Length: 228
Image (cartoon, rainbow, N blue to C red; front, side, top):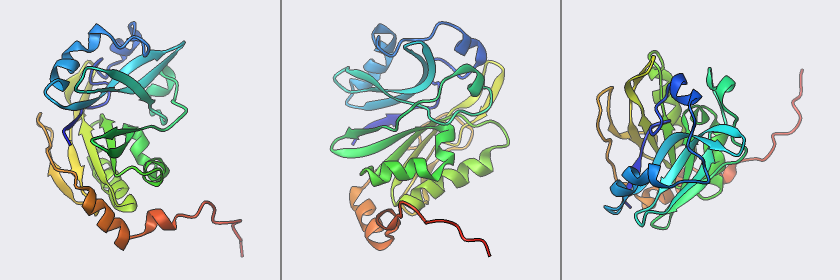
């Protein structure tokens, strides 16, 4: 498959001043996305982070642009962090997309800190987990643990696109990477700009899940907790 995942708020910028301005509307994915359509026309499905207005609510979202130019906004960030809680409304549903017959779960930054978020995508059939993210200085240790953990817990690939450099008043630390279903980084960047490029092999996902059956063995409840 040919897939490009871009960071959180990549299209609007991750900056309070940008978030306070008029935001693109989720029902009008028109000419403002034409530069992304030009990139997608090379045969690439593009997943890009952006702030959006959905009805009367402001959301941190992912738009998906296909090679034929069609665009959708299927996912809004479900776990808001820091100043986002004052600026945005959390999304109310998970989402996956299919690229070349492969199901891939969508996520935005802080979503990936919650094991159940990636697990829900895996249990629904996702073989990969796509994270548009923006980490601040000091967050590298947790960033590198979280996304490797989501990969190994669910026996699936994790694609992490990290915003880097300065945006308004904020500085970001990049760290874009692709983790294999054993949680190993098979492509990784530091704080430099660039692309972390890797091949996602569904056979590897199936082999890993056949050996490590956590997704299959998941229990809906662990019962009442007993205190002794």
